[in-house]
Image 1 (cartoon, rainbow, N blue to C red):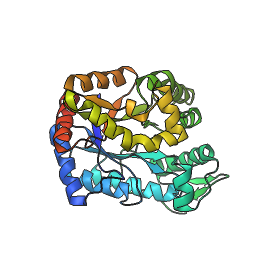
Image 2 (cartoon, helix red, strand yellow):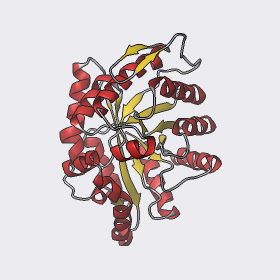
Image 3 (cartoon, rainbow, N blue to C red):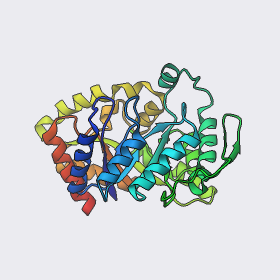
Length: 310
């Protein structure tokens, strides 16, 4: 199993130079990948391209770019540029986003999200694979009068979707390379997410999908666990109001998002990582590792690096 971390969030914004320094630290700790969320601030594919070029050996990815307010031609250009810049170490994560941010931020009606995801992926795949597209759907059109291929963007950029609901999982299994579930514990993975996306991929004749589980987690002293979980409850509470995350939390057997967070000493966290692997996760990416300060962040990365090295 490979292990990674997220760098950057809506609450922690760094300069590019400081992000590069932190990514270098992650690689040196033995971590496999660094992922960047898409906020209204920095452009995540650009940041991933810079970090990946500056930190050889580290896989970089975006988790995740909402399809509302974007177009496959533009996202393809961004992704291929990042792939060429990093020598083939870029991973594109897409998402449906939320109704609130879509309608208040972009002024776009949040209509037919599954239909848009299907058309977006259908148009995007040939762009990434061949640099051309001739797609005319109900919700979008993507055509290339000349090549949209970026020299050096090989292998083809892998596409993952932050899918957790059954319809999004089926579309992702059929048209993407894997999924990026967040706040979906081992039970939700084993009983819901992995079987659904895997069956859809098999029916479409595609390889077994990657299951990149994003997990809020911190290694901390046993005496600090309850205090850190209270911080996690505050930081994650907003997700409880979003239906897709709410369903994932409940499918995990939890009532609150903070119950999904992996918090404890090294032995506790290592055991939880194994549970995710046994539930079908091919990769685990820890988020919120800075929740309790720098010392615990370093401690968490050290453990994840050790686990990643086997």
